[in-house]
Length: 144
Image 1 (cartoon, rainbow, N blue to C red):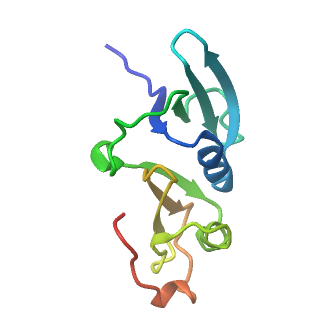
Image 2 (cartoon, rainbow, N blue to C red):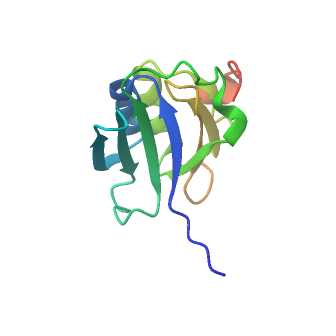
């Protein structure tokens, strides 16, 4: 038997806020479908160079709200992405109001949370960067 990764689905409460967050990470919208009968929207986002659908995050938005969403979405783990410069990406996220829960003190790994409390792991592509401020002395914030 052969398996192929398709996507990771996360339920979101505010579709616009969630899309804006994932775009800050560098993802682009690949596909969107509205399902009138089921009253929900699916939005697939991916890195720009992987629009073949093999690295998608599927955002599921229920039009009538979703009070059943857990307060902490850690039950599924996290989404993980590599980036060209972890310091630059974390700075962009901070400049846009995103809390850096686990700063990239080691020049290699950081964790943030989406507006729906989804844990996102960011990894430096290639070799880790040299330690730099403010990251090297920044403490963890909250859970990651």
